[in-house]
Image (cartoon, rainbow, N blue to C red; front, side, top):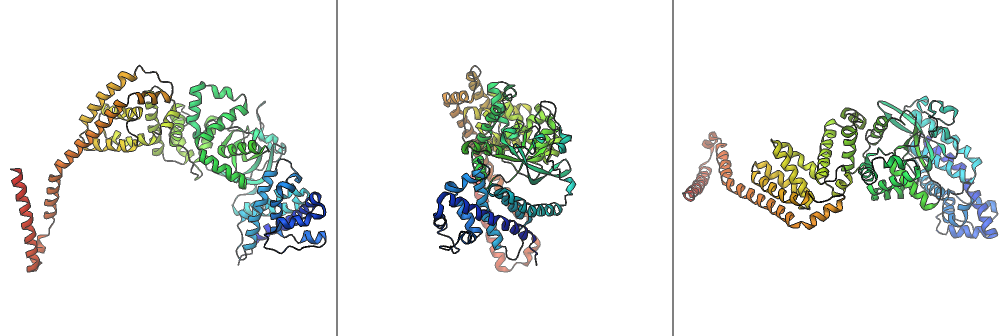
Length: 588
């Protein structure tokens, strides 16, 4: 039978917090309502499952508030009474979220009668209790911390992590190895200040083959900045540079808040729905998954969480903090190491990320081909991904790059994202690889590029699958020749057409719908010709199948047939012979 050690640790913490909550409720209610304070409490708890006394001494009434009713009373009276009385003005929203979380803790402790709660749940519950106690009666927090420390020590042992491997750094003196270059911000030097405070939590991170637990800190949002090497926003950054110049982000970084504001918009636009879900979750239950920042404040994991916290801070007009591990300055000035770290965190720890496929492909292409920052082997090792998958993604990115040059918008990768052409070019790889000559390969690309340019097919994947079917039969010469003729018509108009944005491409397609219709007709005719060919060869294929089936008959079995079975077989042979004779007559 379980000793329920974790349950006991959490319950002991609650035993400390419970009277703190009750005393806080009584004091603040009396300040607000005087002698009528208990009547107001009864209004708050009208739906309580537990009996509420009508009268008694103040101490008796206060002591009658059990854990559940304390949490309910704080929640019901938060806005009118309690929010203005906490120790840290500005943290009202965060505090009520934690108080609501205590209800889940209370329920878990009340219903775990036989089995112990998990160590993780106990540790998190005690952390929540300490944070609430800090706001209501800080001098009592140390009593809860005793139980939290016991849970933390047990957690470290259970994870097979030696305590000396947990790199807790709480003071400037402890951070001697992390001194930054002169003039460079260093978060380690801010530990213990209002900008960076330890949480007591840790996060395990694997760098290379080395796994360690690193301490998590609460970091003021104005001490952090976005990572411009983030693949999630690679096409957005490309768009910004195309519109403002290659060194525009570098210049923008001279004002960190302005820089953060621009990148924040990229993060939001890249996946608004995912951002909304994350923001709602953080608002309801606080940030649960710590991020990772470098000691200069660069975020290498947690850009979306950081964005949500920035938005909440702006909306609520109250300080929010980013919970994150801080890694030393051996990464700060090395783009290659930063990229390898990002890949390891985003992809190498069995974590799937919801990147737009084009962003992901272009990010990989930039890192390996364009800048040469990483080799395929280095990327594979850092991202825990096969080299074959990486090479395929690069090939698709190269085709996307070729397409953008074709439509006179070189490296405007945001246009490729807006057109959503990744799946088209991914499907095109198989027929492209099946073609033998370089000329045929170039023609297939031209056909696909023109199809996007002219908006000839809405369903681009169906379009390329139809092309694949035509190529598979080997009867694609006439179709390719027709498409070359149409290509001349397109470029007679497009070569002198000025293009500076996607809107120009849209206008060109709209003004030349007749050519798009001609392209659709050419494909339809090619597919119809293919169907006619298939219909012609169908009789031959059927006869071949029939002959093959007859040859498969085991003649040794014929002697074992009964007279009735033999008659039935001969009847079917006559039917078959009759059908064959009929075909011979038709063939003349």
